[in-house]
Amino acid sequence: MRYREPDPVGVGLMKGALAGVIATWVMDRVDWAMYRREDPASRRRTWAARPEGKDPAHVIASRASEAMGYGSVPQNHPAGTAVQYAIGVAPAAIYGAMRDRVPGVGAGRGLAFGFAMFVAEDEVANPLMGFAAPPHRYPWQPHARGLVSHLVYGLVADAVLTGLNRAFRPEPVRYRRPG
Image (cartoon, rainbow, N blue to C red; front, top):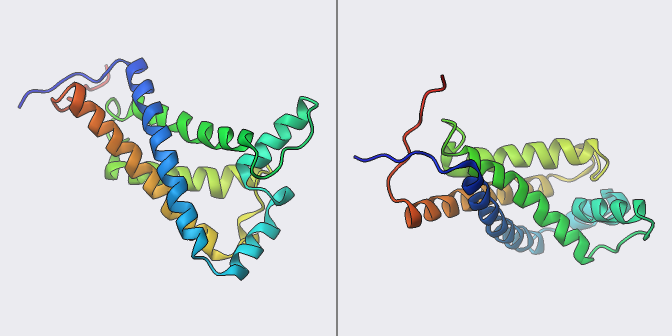
């Protein structure tokens, strides 16, 4: 079996960014499909718990807009969507650069990456920064929906990276030991 060296870091970042766009789009579709099937009482409790009555991406966009002197943005403003994609693209770009360089980063075909994103973003960073309420203020359904949609995000990001690698450089990666 022939092996290839990992892509240059910049190429890995670009592949990861593309994977992040696609994974974020798919994740959003999965999340909305699950949301539409949620119990109406759970949806009301979720929205009541959210700061400013907005999802975290729109809270971030609103606060950035206010800091620049433009005022708050509404829930469905395109700036919130841009923030959502930035939040999805940046970590996937890093994942794309590291996946073939660091053993274990691609564990579980992206499931570990998706799980890490769920915990780091939804359960820790957003509440700590005030972009979401503390986790205990939400019913269990949005936590389950967030977990599933982030696992899908990780799987899709990894699948896109695998597809790009196969399309452009079909040999498997050989890891090099540091030093």
